[in-house]
Length: 155
Image (cartoon, rainbow, N blue to C red; front, top):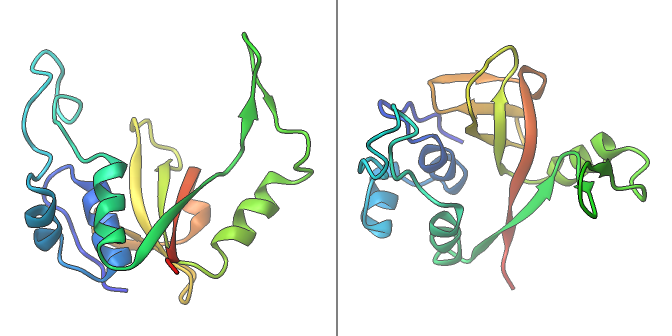
């Protein structure tokens, strides 16, 4: 996997490009926008930007014969107010890491000790390394992960 460093708040785009082994600029051309249009002008950056939607990213994977399988790190359920962990999973950490163990993925969450609203980065299962589009390599324990979008081969 090749590390790409973003110069704008386009972490989902860059994480997807790294997982696909594709240039982020090619994905921008394919999707038809770069996610940087201001669509919520009353909000400050980066919340004001259109951004990329995971459905646009899924289309890029499908065009190359791959799919993205979502896996929540700590799945919750709730009939109304409050929520509780899904009781059939005795160890949601073990389940989650088992799923990403053999697959590259886009991971979603935030950097540990950060108050950022959310972030996406690439996971390389071969090197067991996180490829952060902020321009550095790190390990899983440097993040609070909420979900993975795992790259899977389509039949």
